[in-house]
Image (cartoon, rainbow, N blue to C red; front, side, top):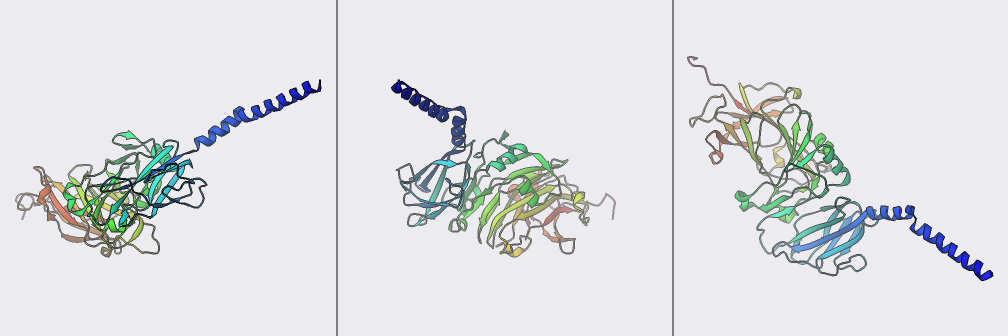
Length: 424
C-alpha cells in the first residue's frame, strides 16, 4: 500500500513539472523570447580580390547580447563566434536592435572602406548579414564600392506611415534601403546615381532641413574612412519629399556619418521644377572642414514661395528658386555651409533651362540669365556672376549652365524680359 501511494505521489510530481514546463504560458514565454532575438553574421572581405580577410577586430555597439555597453570581438573568438571560417563572425541569440559595427583592428596595410557600419536585427530581418570591405592601401581605388545602411524599428514605422517607396514599391523591411556609391574621382564620367526614396506624404514649403530630417526619420549612412574619402567621390541615395499643394520637391541626402577635408559629394540625379522649364542636372561639392552627421536639403520651385516672406527680385522672370539647407551635429566645430570657407572650391550646380523662357537671349539663342543669392544678414538679394554656359548638357529644347554657388543659401536664377517690338 505504501509503495502504491509513493508511486502515485511521484507521478503527480512529474505531471505538475510537465504542466509548468510545457503549459501554454511557458511556451508563449519561450516563443516570445525567440521572437525577440536572431543572428548576426559579419563577413570581412578584401575589396579588390573579394576574398575573406582574417585577423580583424570589431566593436559592436550596443552589446548584442545585453544591449548595454559594447562588445569587442575578434574573428574566431570561440566564446561567441559560432563560425570557425576566417573572415566570418556568426553570433547567435542577438537581441532585436540596431547596431553600429566599427573596425578597430585590421590586417596590415589594409583599411576599412567605411566607418561605423550599421545593421539591424529585426523581425523583418532576423538573420542579419553585413559585409565589411577592407582596401589594400598599396593598390589605388578602382571600381565602385557600395555604401549601405538599415533602418531601426522606429524609423521603419515612420517610413511605412509616410508611404516611403523605392522604385514604386513600399518599404516594409529594415534592410530595404538603397545603396550609395564610392568611386575614384577620375571615374566621374561613369558615375551613376543610386535608387531614390520617394515619400507619399508631403511637407510644408517652409520646412527646415532639421524638421524634414527629424519628421521623416532620414537615416544615417556611413562615410568612407578619411584615407578613402580624399581620393574618391561619394554619391549617396536621395530622398524626395513633395512640397504641399505642388509638384515641387525637397531633395534630401541621407545623414552622412562624417565629412573630411577634401571629401567630395555628388548629387548625380536630375530634378525638375513643377513647370519643367528648368532642371537641376547635378550638384558637386568638396569640403574644407570636418563635421559629424551632416545632411543637406534642396528645395526647388519655379517661383519664390510666398510663405517664405522673401523680398522680390529685381528681375522680370524667375527660372529657378533653389533653397539649400543643412544639418550637422558636431557642436564643438562651428561648421557653417553658408560660409565659402567651408568648401575647397565653390560648390557647382549644373542646370538646364528651356529655350522658350521669356527673357532676353544670348547670341546662341539661349536665355540670358543671372544668379542671385539671398543675403541672410541684410535680407537682400545679391547678384553673383553671370552663369557660365555648359554646352555638354544642351539639347534641342534646353541650354546648359554652371552655377558657382560659392556657399549654401537661397538662390534664384532669372532675367529680364526682352523689350517689346517698337520699344526703345
